[in-house]
Length: 209
Image (cartoon, rainbow, N blue to C red; front, side, top):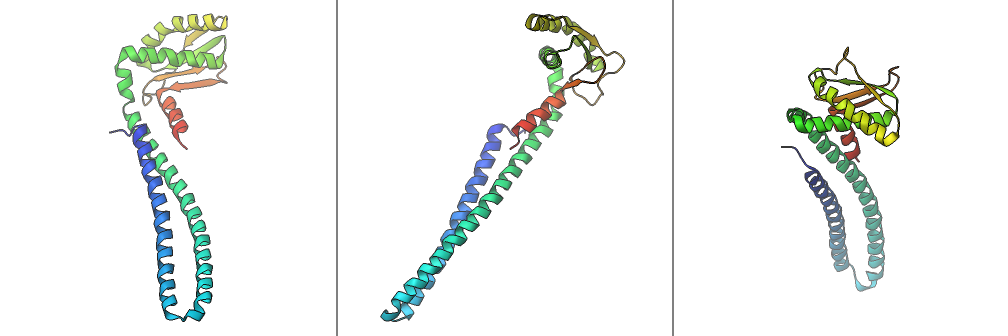
């Protein structure tokens, strides 16, 4: 089952809580040991030696505080790295599972048609070219052909410019691509990859720390 954002956040919260608890327990253990040593030493010495014992205790306590600050800094640094690893691993698992389910998107032809229209429209707005070549999967050819007049109309309404959309009938997207489109300028110098896989990868990059 895919991990959602809430599950990822819970994993990160548990990691942060563990790091904080570890730091607190480490400090408590050090303080407890020094306190025990101090009490033993106090019982061993005479009343006249109390001042020197207190001074030695204060010195040790300062050393503990300094060591604690150093340890906490190291633990926090390591903790941040652990949190990043947890999030990266979680996002990676989500993306891998999502890739395996991209075919579910294309099976619902009504929703997939809406997605294709948005992907094509986003692409032409990025390019802002008068002529754009559309490359799609061969089995999406009929859908894309029906969408081109709608996209051109919306483009002209927004920009006030005419748009010519051509389908690349000589080269289709490879079979391993689940769906989406690639938009290319006639000279093929500029292209916008709006395949489902690319959109998923962009979402993954935004989710990473």
